[in-house]
Image (cartoon, rainbow, N blue to C red):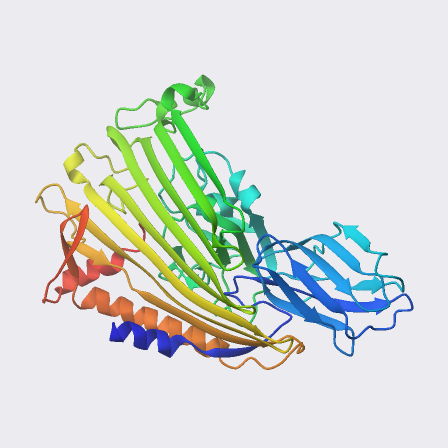
Length: 516
């Protein structure tokens, strides 16, 4: 415990950042702009009130002597913005969309008039972030829900993102639970997924878990042109979970498919040209699902309106795929994901957020990583091994707005996984050891933003990234070369720590494992 607390305290840093641009790990957006009258003269002292379903209560700002205002830390969602000033007709702007890391700029003109003369403008939400150069594609909850059936995962999302390339595209869930490499503009091995602001990268590029895509309110994929807080040049993804609200809301989905419901996309002409298969499967059957099932449900609401919100989600997925190099029986993958989030308003301008995500992946016949998808033919189930994977993410966050002049945010959390594998026989094989324990990445960030400043210095951003990388590599070395946990049963994570070091051959085998 002391080691964990020390690591978190070490990595937490204060970053004085430009308020006009959201940071790399930001879980919110912002609204800013300038208010003038009909003669284009600036209007100081205008009260700007923001409200919306994703916000607890309302947020208020006041324009300064230049007529400028800014509201940082605005959760993704649709908002109504009201401008009021004595002697001027109130102005209301509705359906203003704020996305992750996006600054919605609203420059408005107010007309002289009575209070009764309320001017309302619906729509016309800003679509260009004038304060950022990032190349970003944003997916909101309705768009995530429209992903093709069977492909509701991280890699399906990337396949819909411009400028990104995947080495394999999932078709109808046939590759669910199996990762694919991805890159943009030729940059490989430098990616960074951030779930609720927590770095969940496995190694330097891979996604470390299998989240429930239906549990997210919004996902932003940044392909290039990152801000200085992004330490690597690859793809950066920001995931923000759904939250509760002042009303109860929920949904449930179910997807099912079997091989009788599928057509064939390999015809006789293609077979005549030389398409073949192996392992006892005909050419027309090599790309077919034997069975697919995907069920999920979520529910959110409140305990105290505008004070304490909660949200929870569960997803259970199972696929059975015919593989030409494993014709013994269908290849099974089972994924179960639990997600929870709580939001508490400590005071008018201070909010506490907690988040947890727990995954379980089971492949009872996982194939050797160097044979899967190649020409190696498995003639016996005993040649495979029983894989269990347990990724975990935890987060705690506090953010507060101090008047119109200061915004503070602090976040700490952890990502890690346990990976026990069990052989079916004692026959010679390459040794993956009794279990692998992934590095626990301790994540922390602190941020102080001055809403009036446009380009202040940013000390600490790079230091924080270096500390996170150093902690991750230190943990990785310790887990691979030091004490390892052992599991007496793969379906029950009973941890029995052994007090011996692996020999050199085991170290080499462990280092070679990079894909799940």
